[in-house]
Length: 452
View (cartoon, rainbow, N blue to C red):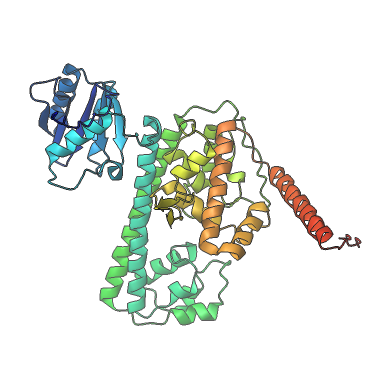
């Protein structure tokens, strides 16, 4: 009887033979290359700058041209930048896409697994904008953290006022506005007369002088005044840091090239409402004008897109969207498309996947602001709200905004809402044809109503 031959599982073809994998950590980096490149294919390097350069020298000596690594916290940034400067192609991959099979997990096995997946072409690099856009992105994110820290001290001020039973922060819309800061400075200077404090309010305050004076009657305790003084000083300190960050962002934006389609002056807005600078917009320069110069088109003309949203798009994506195949791929990358998962013929999941994207969050906030808008997108938002609910309407409208922005950035055309009006006319015409056909099948005739 013939002996049975053992079945053999063929290995996957090697598409990237010059590939390496790096397991990133806070204090150590484990690097793996193919076994035929070095007698010791797995090595460990400390994260000091000198050792990072030694790591890259070893990769170049092994003939490595492409490296894959996980995006672990911010530890990947130094080695990523050094590898990029030395001309190596770096694949920054999502940790969820490179999960190993269950079993013993070590740093050595992780870097070897990354190297294998990359060599057989199973990894996709995450989107990362160019270096000059990343510099502005870092500054803009740092600015957002400063604003968040300043907001915490506003809460401390409100807590001190509550403990003294001063209700001024409930009467005024913003305690950090002109009127609120005047009153707080006068209180810390020793003023206790409610009427005198109430007269410090700006003329645009809607509350009456009697209500404001009534809210300023309280128990002025020294310990709470001390906390109020320190919180106010800390708030103003962070406001100064925000101004310094705005100046640095202005310098970085000035270094960006002017788009070929940009005109010397910013064109007038097409939105029916005038532009009012928001509370957290930079005050040292015209953000909308700079964004128009860089993009070549005024993205703030799109309903729901403010200057802050356009700045977020610039920092997170840049001006070039050619990395995405089309608008559908762009919306899918933002997590604004339904993801259908089917197993055994049964639909398990149809909702949009959870994606931590600042652009998607900004577009969702912009979509939410269109609830009362008297335009096509506002009507679309309200129609989807009636049909599917508010949360689904926010996602659907954000998806439509993403498609509009992709079209504007890829074609450099100005926003024109007449395209949507034509689409609406086609929809009405199809609905009319459908009604006439159904009426004819039932033996009726549709007669249009007379105008007037």
